[in-house]
Length: 303
Length: 301
Image: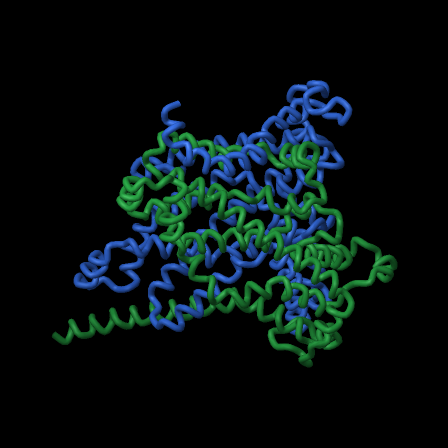
């Protein structure tokens, strides 16, 4: 009897340690993931001289809004322009993507469609094999004339095969009987798509839409490829340009004599631009997070 | 033909997506021909002189040695990214399963998932905040504890590690959700039976959770292996930009193609891209074949 009790005690101590470790580990990872962000935020609200003197830290040093004031006074128009470009391509791109993706996903989710596997294969093949960067760039620039065009920021990323398969999974969850009875009532597929499939998949639409929106918001690759005109820079590419100048000088690649002639944005300005870039994501994050989790889980279960 | 008449509306709904694929995936495939020519603007893609495999030969044996170097860098970064990018998320998922408390779970998961929402440019800014020579946090820590500071952006030997770490940091929350999704499908009666038999928490993790996670791990790894010849352009460029001091160390095939595009011409860089795509095709097909074996006949695609 006595022996059994100690045995039981032993197990629960072990369990307790496992549990304790789990809490510490999760808390540690959470801090590691969040800390850099807090640091960026703090520096953007710090006094530049204090940052130069004491370096980056997690708490604002000599809290001030000067950086933001300076930024809006000196490059307010440029930031505003980039913001409008980014918002524009995000809204138009997401809307277009959703229309294109939901239509094809709906179509290939219908079992009556004889060649739906062929269509799925045509899509799939582009994941398995691609022409590569250069031929893609070549046809975009020389045949489609996308250089310095807003279209270049929208059209190339408008259709994602991954998102199509995710959406098809959602559409397949709609009971077929609903479609069938609508067909018996004489509804066309267009009507079924608009009046039944879309309204019943609101969560799915929001999930996939947010995934597209995040892609457009965070995109700077298309800008790097096609945009030379500063007026057309999206926000991310604007930030990239600020940082890459800084990078070149701190590596010593540009001689310090020359570096003195280039006016560098201060430490706090760099971080403030970063904050401005991710600002909307921070504000929306509490509301949108669960849709992404749902999307990942749905995709993962399918695999 | 009858099929097209019957389901005309459905086929019409597929057209916009298929047109986009045609424009940005299939038509560019015609440009692959450049890989076998010495392209010049005057003669165009199909009129330029045919040179056979010369471009490929230069990539593998050229005097600069850049070809083998970028292949090595790509495989190195992807390999360690795959190993640690699997271990860390699994550790997160398993430990997350052990903690209770709604608020604690919500707050920590939100924190861990957040990096996924940041672009590589923003991650680059964060890396800069840590490693900048004069104001970076790491150098302040070093000098604060009496060590010599390091000019990180001029010392290339650290950067593979920094990039792999940043990669894991950005994706750990996202990937852990995939493993958690798998874990929600595990049969709870297995755990109950094990508890009745006196298995400790640790034993339950080792003998139930981990073996059950194996298929998911295998599938995700196979998917990564299929893309092991593809470097993450955004990651490399977002973090180190075109810093020439670090270039050798972190240039992957994709960034090399981009930077060689103007200096070494379209034909040479198309050939590199084709090599990549063919390796990808082979590895994806192999992975798919293997995936079918471990996954009851269901492949990756």
